[in-house]
Image (cartoon, rainbow, N blue to C red; front, side):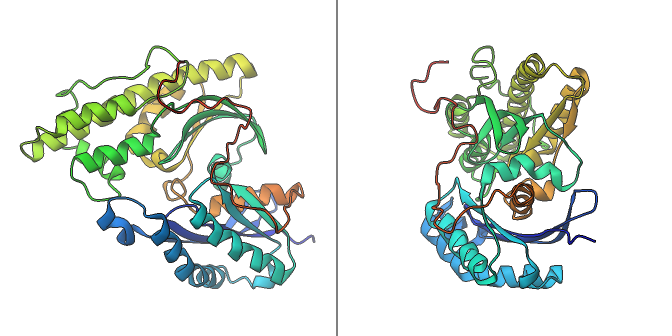
Length: 357
């Protein structure tokens, strides 16, 4: 019987130190043997955001401990690992370097393949951790640093259909939370506060809602919240702003996703339509409900990773590593970190003031 591949995954692109070990099963899917994530929330809380130098120092202090814990939980010996996969970008270069150097050292010491992973590809393939999804599919990647619609045609084959021209969706959530006086990381708290508020009290802008295809914009929405935040008098005002913001985001994502689904159908012309929603903001339960409803209307299968695999984690890096391992797509140990690394490197750069769409 052939030995099933065992992949060690490492993630240090921002403020989570994570190590996971997965093993290929007989059906080709992956068994997660361990998935250890160490958050740095307490390190950065007083600064209201991630401080790169502090993040890198924390990774250096913790990565060996986290790796040891992952090995112990998996009951796998390091020498039995078949390949080492690590996030090489995009992300904070000082943080990426910690994970890369650690992974290279392990790869060299056990003489096993080294695989550099695009963090976004980890998110794109994260549904493979719990489903038998096949290519092609439409992907909505929504996180703190990225918001884009992508046609996924195969491993390494991505075509961008739409992207944010300013803030990422997760960034908009975090900035709104900060304006409401919520401690970092505040984005996930918006959904909780919204349950206590009146979503119809404030009418917020819907940037480029009827133009620009499935491109997105959130900067104007953030500016509107800034103006409202200057007149907060009590907790109910905060709840109502949060509820109005959440409802507005749902409207934007519903409308833009509908446009993206229509584009996908024109391109692929298939009855087996799948819509994957991944990234940290995919954990937002209301967004999940709205997009599940849309998929029912448009006859698409809505596919979400488990909530624990929406945020940054090493299991998604390991699954991307497994896919590359099966195709023998290895990298040499000279591979450098890529703080900017697009999935579709042929897509035009749209982000920035004055962009016309």
